[in-house]
Length: 74
Image (cartoon, rainbow, N blue to C red):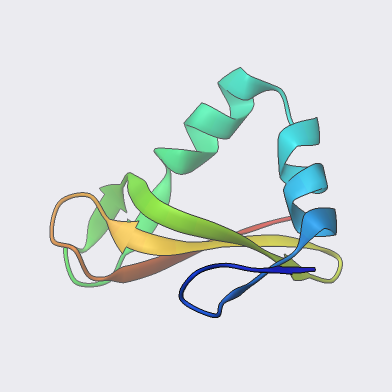
């Protein structure tokens, strides 16, 4: 694991899983995240990829309102 400038731990295994998904599907997943603040499906931005058995989690911000959102991917 690697530490980013803000002391957040980056998981190489989670990033490897994320990059193994075809680019077109990754783009669809980024644009299909539920925001409870907007009460609709939004795009996730400024996200980190985290390990979460049995898959990965994208944790970032809603493109519309800036609130925290997450997307679990098996």
